Image (cartoon, rainbow, N blue to C red):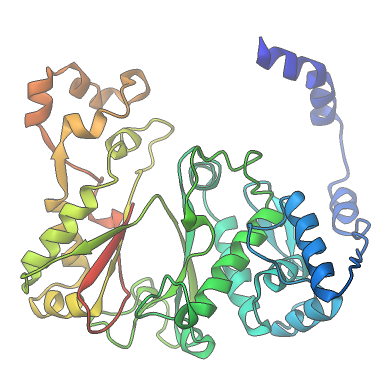
Length: 389
């Protein structure tokens, strides 16, 4: 009844628009050359009072993240645009989840508000473009879900060192060591909000929320990694710079005291990867489509990566080992998704077993070793790892 009341009044207009021929080029031109927003002026007893009024106004419109914003003055935005040779009005992408038109200038404004510098702009533009290329189901689950999902930026190649992106101790902040990481992650979040319409309660329907949505950005610790870097693993040259965006559903710190072999260390990481995997078997089974669901991003610190590699494990072999050891009883995996009619037929037998049998049926928590993603991140002298579902 509620749905009918909401949709009946506009259904005819929607059908009219969908069946009326339009000139696509003219429509696009009208959108891209629309009237620019008017500049605003904030006055106060002094510049700090004016700054406070600007921040209050911006936050009331949900243009910020709750922390103080840097005023995106014309001078600051113009300076930010010097970080690229692209025209300010060039369209970088259509930015999810609201498919806002992300011009270079619009992204630069969000970057300025986040406290970024001109040389940071290409990284944020690349991150926006990466998100725009995600499949619709990834956008829906990653940005619009009721779950506490958040993007994390991974930077590889020479640009990471050029910008001073922290790949070691406290790489996920806060503080001086990770200042660049923080403003880069924040710049993406503000762009997602103010260009992609990722506003809480509007297109971000997160039930509880997570501090990971404020800012997450790291570089891979390529210098101290025993393996080929992430971007080389995926076909890029070592001297190229890349930006990768993952959508994470949590983070778990992993401590391992006493193990110094590849098998022992990987077993600990694999057992930790089971955490957060509840429901993976459901998405694997095709709640929405046949694409494999779920994944685990593993940040392995150099102090653990070295003995793992010394034991003969390539990244591929490590993923295979983790897949074989990250297993759990079927009852644990299906308990939070107790709707068998939404699961593909070949998995429904699991729901028909008595609880005791469901406990005895052991299944891998992910569809295959390719659903594990290994990156070397962290301090060189401390042996702690982290996994993100």
